[in-house]
Length: 134
Image (cartoon, rainbow, N blue to C red):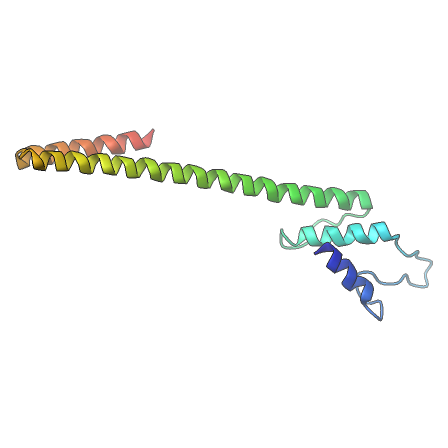
């Protein structure tokens, strides 16, 4: 998108875009590498919602681009890790539920008295909740 931003800026016919021609006050036209660095900076800043800090030199703009890209990568890694932890938690909960269900089936098949089944159910559920806290 930085290339497109640069291309659009350079195609503006009356030079009112971000690549405006220098005025008659002695300003020099920016070198191509600085214009391109500005376009990359604009593109990367769009991921954050806009440009809040203005980088002046090409080196600053390149640093801002690299910083933004690394921020995106690190954010994606963090989100990926969180998703993995949540999936693992879901697997653990599912296996505990299956274990509780199999215990209830066992008690029913072996005609364990209802009062005792209820006591065992409460104990197992309480124990599972306690383990989830750790």
